[in-house]
Length: 347
Image (tube, rainbow, N blue to C red; front, side, top):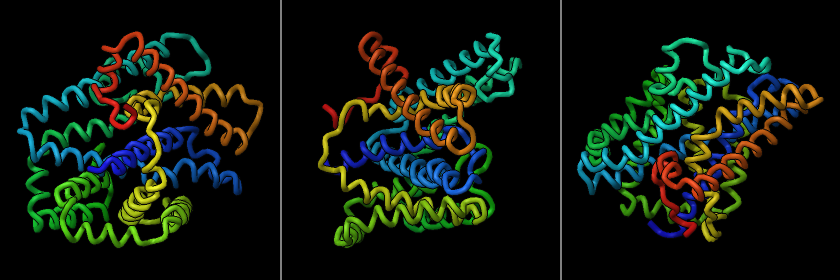
């Protein structure tokens, strides 16, 4: 992989992480409040279209690289440190935090809030094992399952006929629903596409396609992405799930080509802690949003827009500050919570 591609991935991961934080702020209460409600909805839904496909695609890409070189025991051992340990560590942290909020008599936090313990013992067990109080970790849970079956996925990717059959089968399933329980079929499709791209990265046909795409005007990609994300914003509730999935995949492709604007830029260390921001953000985001909603003397779309932007910025700043403190004063805890991820492009 070239340095330019690696830089694009770093910027893409950081931008996608910011978009996810925006997506999890406030909610859909103000979507129908005129043009400003549309702006809020765009920040929550339209921009979100490319972020999770981007994460899944590159997760599949790098996993297939490992699967071609390492045996399953070594892969699972490595992913134990980067996925399983952080998964249980963060789940435990947010479960204990949920219990603490339930025991502190704060009127602004109802026990019906998703980040507050409901008093049931089984909820504690679900919180630690099934991310009940750490909702964004459905993604990590799915990655752990995909890691267990990585050798099977490798065989699918390496057999073109089987690969096409599986993709078509998954698309057929998506005509019914893009999720089976917690498991994202859309995420699996993106993961398989990433694995296929990794396996065939230097194939002449793919190289020719990349060369042809590079001949298009650079401005065509951001303009197309803006148009598509606006279309997704106004139509995502009315179109079939599989159509939305295809639109999301196209948005991911356009976003990747937009990252060409960043490929010669410097990558900073605070950008490469996207995994920590992702793991940290949801509960603090919900609490900040709740505090804003009861303290900001505004109503309607104005309050929602301020809450969305300011809440997301504060959440990211707190995550960056906490990461800096842990890296400086408790590097062992930092390594556990960040899954022993190293800085790649900010060295």
